[in-house]
Length: 301
Image: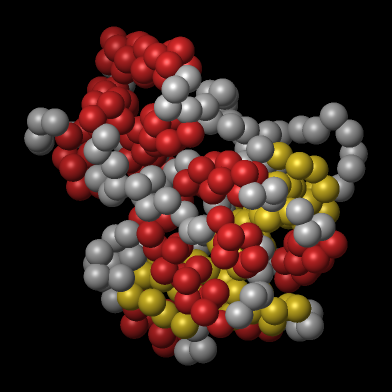
């Protein structure tokens, strides 16, 4: 029997959270310690989760701490229980016991691996990603193929959708940087982990499914804002003296905002512009309400 702590964030998505975690109650090879972090949901999510999953450890945040802050609360609780590996899992993703067991074995067999992910498929069974690339050097950061058929492949970074993390690595490297709030915090953690001798990997023998369509309404505003802004934070944190690199991304972002505006994509153009302004001015952390208001033209920067 393998022990694993599973940290899952909930934000106004109790139905998805319950559907994701309930099958784990019947696992036999892996003993899951379920930790749900509620990021200040506005409805009765907490009550629903308590009723459907009475054995879950439920952490209630007074405010939305984002992916990084919310995950850190769950990670800290898990680390306080011991050294079992920690699985970060989105509530719109599904992973089978066999896949988690495989990932646990991979961590056990490869002490240099600090984080390992399964192949990520969409709801139609199509391959989405098998790891990620450094966002300082790549616009499209998803890895979708490898040059050989080895089952375990080293990658530069990984997604937080479904990732098994070694507890010992977290104790050495530290937790997620909460300035990111959402997006790119895993790339930041991966780069810090590499400085301590750990690598990220994909185990192609394990799979998880991610229902991306559930979050589609926010992808042209909030998602765009955080992806663009956090690349600038990533550059500031790790490539401060690579002035040419930083200048390239500033220019690219400005051109992108203008192109979107001219193309009639007003909401996305405003999201990119605000991300550029905030990235330059060092305004990080959660900006959900401000971004949504600005993208709909209700407030100025």
